[in-house]
Image (cartoon, rainbow, N blue to C red):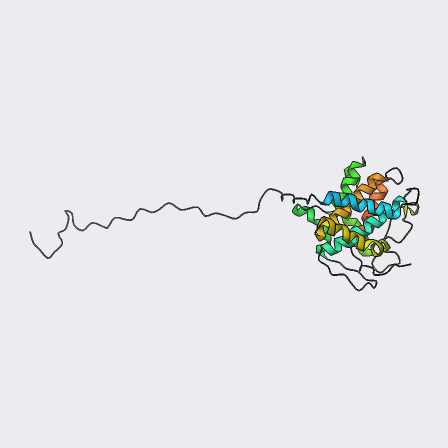
Length: 244
């Protein structure tokens, strides 16, 4: 046997064995969920707050005999809902001079938040429509209503109303915001509501008033009246003094 040289195996130099390849490891792929967004948890204090707000409005608009002009109290509640939906959108109040405010954040509270599983003002109005016994497939398109509001900017009548004159409120509904704003904020403080919670609680109060007054004003008209005033006031600079 010779030393100093590596002995060759029979048949000559053999190629080194190839390493056994490891199996390919699957990498996770991020894909969008096929499930709709989970509905948000509703603050349980919103229902008693909505009831308190409805009582506040009925007391303010009722006469000594307890009679209430339905379009006026619904218009007031809708105007307050619009103003506080604007606040919930994070929009700072304006100067009080006539003017208009537009933004996706406001529309999110009014309508578009439902795509994210959030309760919106429109949800409360459609619930009133359904519970009044009206077919859901016959409700008006809220997007068309928003376009009508935008088209009326700068015109002589804002918010624009399309309901019959016989069902108009007896006042310019945004004036209710000037008179009742402090009392509404007091209710929000009492129930520890966020800005968005307050806007939805006011919409829930509108829902209650629509059903309560269904014998005085047809719900198909009161829902439209509420939506037109609410969506319009949500795009106005908040008033600091009563107009007219």
